[in-house]
Length: 258
Ligand SMILES: NC(=O)c1ccc[n+]([C@@H]2O[C@H](COP(=O)([O-])OP(=O)(O)OC[C@H]3O[C@@H](n4cnc5c(N)ncnc54)[C@H](OP(=O)(O)O)[C@@H]3O)[C@@H](O)[C@H]2O)c1
Image (cartoon, rainbow, N blue to C red; front, side, top):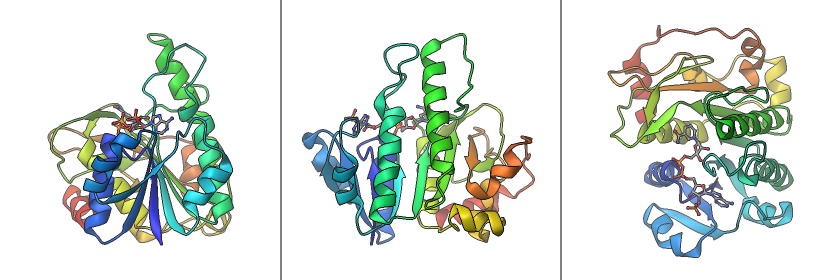
């Protein structure tokens, strides 16, 4: 059994591959440029070549068959035109989720973005608005699937600086930024953590203990931040509130390093 990462040559994705490989996980990484295969192998992953924007459900199902968990970490930046999201920010996510279901993969971790919302408004930059709306619709599609045990992570702005190992996750956090290394550490931990599938989490809403860092927002000096959605938290999200920083950062850091 293995983990498959869509967008496997991304900066976050490569770090996730390294973290999982060190833990002994078998990782495969979907990339669209064969010349990126070497870097993917160096990170400890097996490259699989496909353009997510055009790959069929059948193509991707073949990649995902036998996987234990999947991570969607691809993204196209902010796109080219208002109102026209890049396929990789919506349609490809739906196709990847369809493939996961067909392949019998249950655990789905989604790297989304803070502010993702089908009704997002961002007048300062219509491209951002298009991106956030597309991601919001994709997130909702994923969370509505009862066959998948999905966790959606919505980090704030990424920064290329060393990770702190202290990440404060909350249903609502306020804006901020976060080191890509810290985002990768959260994703790697989630990929190693099972969740009840949507249907069962409705009947048993408490998430497993190991996913409880879903509350709080990271904040050592640099105040890394991110949001979290899982089926188990969906009801609470209807009444968003900042969960504050009551959890011990040190405890969270220890958890991320395990
Ligand atoms: N930047 C931020 O502040 C921020 C904040 C929150 C969330 N996010 C989300 O997190 C994602 C990952 O971040 P990152 O820093 O790791 O981004 P990144 O380094 O730009 O990686 C994105 C990866 O997606 C791949 N990709 C794009 N379109 C694809 C396609 N059609 N088929 C296959 N692969 C495709 C890219 O491949 P190529 O190398 O071939 O282009 C690239 O390797 C972002 O894309 C964004 O959606 C970003």
